[in-house]
Image (cartoon, rainbow, N blue to C red; front, side, top):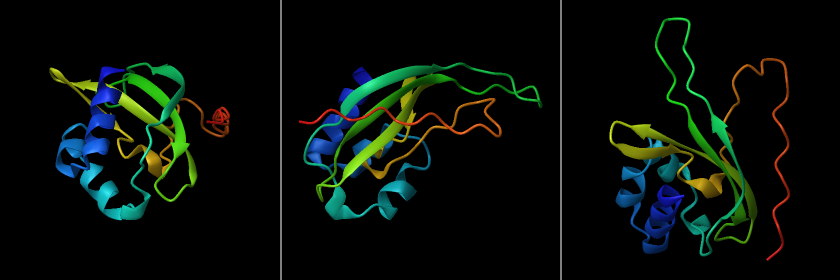
Length: 126
């Protein structure tokens, strides 16, 4: 959860560069594509977590694995969102996929070909 707190601090400060240093290589593209008016004014609520186990690919390489944080809240345009953030180790630091959490990123579960993803939990009313 320390990584999430760092992400939240970067969002509160409005520092896009700091935010993307916490994210994967897609962060600059994701943040550029996001509506600037939707930048959240309130922190997300963690409504669940799950472990994404590291697995071996057919080519012998490994997936990183990590922890998926299930987040919900309201963006800067007062639109509700449900999003998932995968936090994983990259060497000696933690980074995330879904760092721009208010855009509704979902993290696919492995071995679910032909099976629909679980429905998000309801976000508690604030």
